[in-house]
Length: 279
Ligand code: DGL
Image (cartoon, rainbow, N blue to C red; front, side, top):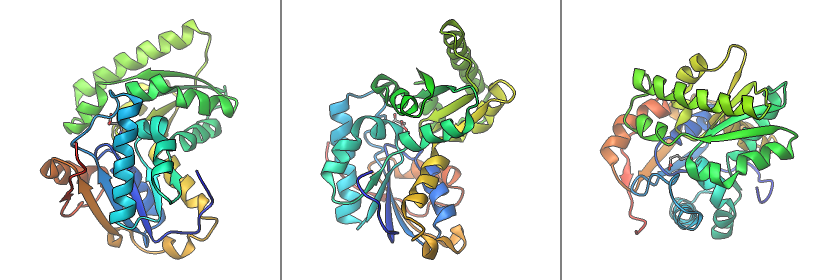
């Protein structure tokens, strides 16, 4: 986070796809009178299997679009992969404050965990960056990370309550628990370190051990954004989220965005506008 901003009127929210609408939904619930511009870089999704250099280039282009063309005065990087690998590149690309989701997610894990041991699931690129382990360590937590690459396509397919998805989650969590046991960890919290995973929250809550907390990085990021405005957000905080002004942009698959995006956002996304950010 580059500085401590006063409450912005236009907030840009960026994700590699439309999973980041879960972050927008959490922001709208807290700041219903702000204007939001959301960009899903659907043409170049997934970021989670790409290199740092490519992710940084895509994310910087997307950030510039939100600031230069949509007038965003504050950016929330809803994408965990872009937050983990490209936050510096994004901050260098735009002259507005930028908030990522990694540190708020780690802070929520710190607040939830009694044992000090947590599990983090994320994309392959986020796990390879070890951004969550570093953020957790800075708060005195031990973390074990695992890449769960099958979950993003399952969510993009709309299989958020499907037996196959539940089975895939069980397999990933069993592998993670086996590793935790082998390394002498006693985890009591699971961080959902990917924009898409909050859509599977019910399945995760059914799959974790009784008493374990499931941490939603979308909620944590929205809370952190509001706190950053130093109480100046009061003017933006009153009113129904149903009336909040939102414009959604995608670099591809507008139809699918409109169809599935409403589930992620909890209300109709409206007409999604197609933008071309280059290759
Ligand atoms: N938005 C990405 C994240 O939160 C998941 C999808 C992708 O791989 O691009 O890590």
